[in-house]
Image (cartoon, rainbow, N blue to C red; front, side, top):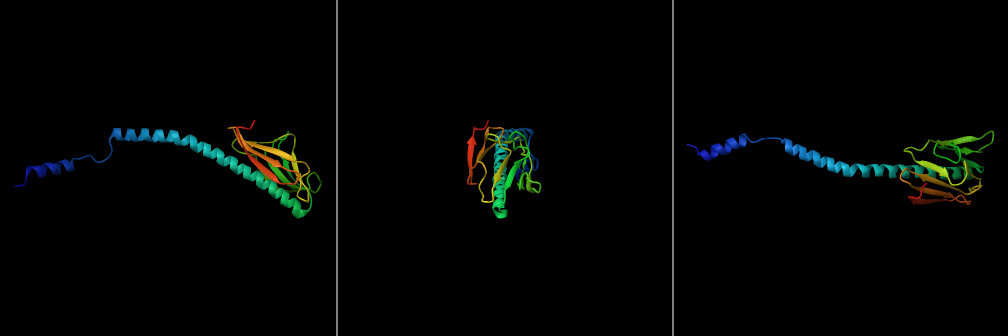
Length: 171
């Protein structure tokens, strides 16, 4: 004869639930919702930071390309805005011999994404590099996003580029 205890223990093991109860699932959903509400805003900020950095890198690379092409070709090469009134947000072209009949487009960059803006401080629709790598006139460009954060690019007469971070300085 078998003990009663072992038969009861066996039945309780066999009848035990396998899976999750509705309350456990609801608690998991609430925890997931709380974690999502914390994580999504920081993810959006990360996307905006990365977009701003990528656009700043594109602008810096364009200026370096224009300057190096001017030195290599020993002729004027310019970055010419596709926009009007000093706005560079619609994109820009890197052009050899700008304004001349035989001008050559070296590279075209598309409009900025994400609602970011790129404007000239003052009035400029192009930045011209000479064959010596200097610029005809110093220029400042400001790259801004919708959080009023951005970068200030200063092209000096020597052709060198200075970049500064602007936190809450864009207008």
